[in-house]
Amino acid sequence: VQLQASGGGSVQPGGSLGLPCAASGGTFGSYALAWFRQTPGKERDFVAVIDWKGGTTYYADSVKDRFTISRDNAKKMAYLQMHSLKPEDTAVYYCAADSYGVVADPESRHLDEYDYWGQGTLVTVSS
Image (tube, rainbow, N blue to C red):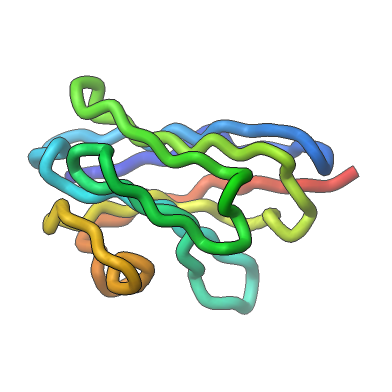
């Protein structure tokens, strides 16, 4: 499966932004989908994951109650809706797919669980 994240941009603190991730090829509906983010010089960090059915989600503590991950299997799309954005949310955001569609905590928080990665999209939170 090929993944393409988009929707990045600049937003003021406290603002909102939605990131779509479009998939092509593969059997999208059977994969778990996740979002990670990375800032220069740092490791890529887990943000959120959703299972193949869209029934189970996990979030990083730093984004819980502010970000929402969702998916539309019919459209082969995943989304990350971000609210109450903070300067520390500034990063390149990546979507990723795990061909094992069931998620588990903490395994699904690890980079090496994911088989496919999209290119990143930059989100900048600044006044």
